[in-house]
Length: 163
Image (spheres, rainbow, N blue to C red):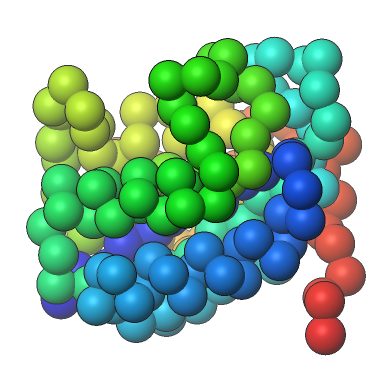
């Protein structure tokens, strides 16, 4: 079984409800187990700033699927919740964005998948929830909490639990 860190994001619709359903779908389709889930965080848009704030979270799952099979599952789950990658603008609004951050200690560079995620340590909106669940995990030689200390977290707010 592999330990996989996955980032969730979205800013269209009831994102927090979508996260709950999407996590269940990911675990079911990946024959995986949810190990831990971060809080949800309201975050400023990144890249294309002319849009609503995002909600972001991270999960850790265990799965027996290989990285490409898991990527296929994540893309299927995105589609189920209305994401059409071919019709959206880069870094634009979306119902659900799922990014594989790390898959065990696998290092992979393929046209459709790079592991660990190549822009992880530029993105406070991923590092804040990731540091909540895996502060001591070392990815690309950097401890998550140390990576978080090197980026601005301005505008990122932890949301209250949904109950």
